[in-house]
Length: 183
Image (cartoon, rainbow, N blue to C red):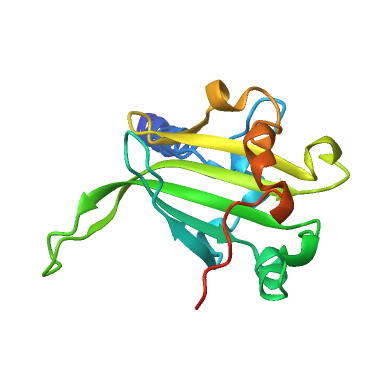
């Protein structure tokens, strides 16, 4: 009887440990800007087709890849945002930023992604985001210490409107800066 109790306690301790580890590991799609978008609204972005790459001139260079969901890729291929046409509701676009590192295997100097820096996402829903051209915005920064994504509320604030002011410059292209790269 005593051995059964010890076995039961041992199994319970193992299950509690495994459960604790599982809970501690972040489901990146649950991260949300308070009062704003969650990354879950762009679930699947890691498998979306590329729109283009970019290399902004910033104090700390980041390698950027812009990807879009099938709805938005179809719109790009149909010629949107040319001639003032707008992306349809349901369009989603994500910018993934990496800290670069040298590729030590290549026979020439080339930078490749090292660790993720941040993820920015935009969601088109003209009813929900009527006052920002139909787009909602979110910015999530990677925290290497905790290996999690956290909302960038310093940049973002506590809503889905953070990018509206910056993206106003791209009003003629439905608030999207990145053109679909020629293939």
